[in-house]
Image (cartoon, rainbow, N blue to C red):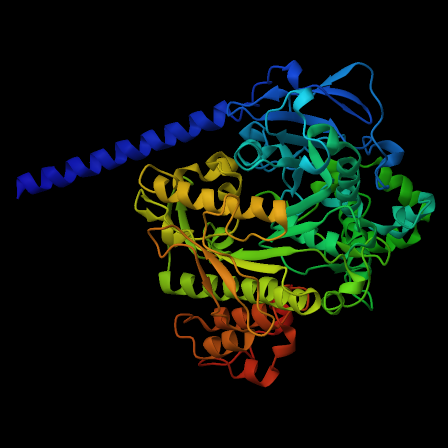
Length: 632
């Protein structure tokens, strides 16, 4: 008895000591912060000539050549803020492209190289329009010419169009392994990238200036730079694949829709995206207007800043004041504000992202009207071969660290409160993402443009169990986890490095080789086929009459295989009506609203809303939970 007590006491002491050491470790890491990467050493063999002047880069550890921080546009500061990006200025001498350019204004987060004490605070510089290039190692005399030029892969980073940094994604593995030129970019984020306020129209000379879509225009300007300069690096300006993940995937879809992007790219890969745009009214109007604006529309943001400045006591007073100010006064007020002033009034979405309208259907840069209908007619969008896909457990990244579903201790020990409920909610949301963001889009495009549309689902879920947390269940095949497999580097998502270990490394390496080979072959030929090198299972196109997609998984977990098993939003509704894992009535009603109640949710289908069905849902019905309460 005494021995058992002592043994239990010893275990308790060990656990306490272990937790104390963990806390000390976390504190040390926080104090140490995130050091910027060391500057590379110039390698004269990488000297190239661009339209702005000569640049010299460096040699990567795997032999690839790299160039970081090349300006592709003038700094969008002063009078150039909220305007079409202007071409980069010429420079004297040779630009040393050895370190990443500044990241754009955003809320501090782990995806950018900052001291961790700045997480959650506004950081960044408006002078941020830079791109980065990786290429196979070639001396100036060996640069590929003519028909031998290499395909270009143009990466648009994710982050809700409000966080992120292009240089965070090294293209050295793709470049060296699969003989492509990899370009990654920065583009204006948040309210510096998408902001549509009537007062700004005073000094906007062109329809593009008045569009509010400055981040979208940045992407087009970077593509224009690639068209005019990439041949100097051995790239083929006539074979450019745009690809992006999350917000970068939605931006990729916006390039398909944008008339002025026509001819700037020739293939597209959409990773965890879909069709999602905001109307001009949503971006501009007060939230209580007859055509309501977004809660963080430009006019509502001005309200918030007037209150923050002490010029108004509350939102109603700020609205009254804003309506009294002249356009000139409002324009001067907006231009006097720093990015930090703007960012400080937005509501966060987590990970540093903010909630705001973007990809605005202004009618010039991005067409107005029903975009789904538009993608059904190849004559009115930029029709190119497309890969589109999602991850099986998309929403686990967003809900896996949400205190509503998971308890967290010291930000490293996680305990799911109700596993059945967690699995149900993440399952509905992730399935809806695939249905609306992949299947619907693939079906539209394949009916419109034929057999050059390919779909996938990413299923890797071999994370370890750490400190009692089963990450294979907590995260599984979560949002963003396919990105390291594409780039062939686990360092791409450094904040989740704990999910990779020696046990899952062989499967990880094999799947990464397959994924990167498919992406590269698509860039080379317009079809993923059997991957670059013809060593992978054949990836067949989506079938317009029933769907067909590739499942990406490790050899030890059923492997890579084709599937035609699809579901529909009606199937999800049937599941939800019979659901037993969501025991709380309010949560059951909330899930119905999330799936069928909001026209702004790209994963939802409001055409399936049934008020009578909602009122009688579950054991008690949803009469006590008005739909609008959840939508707010």
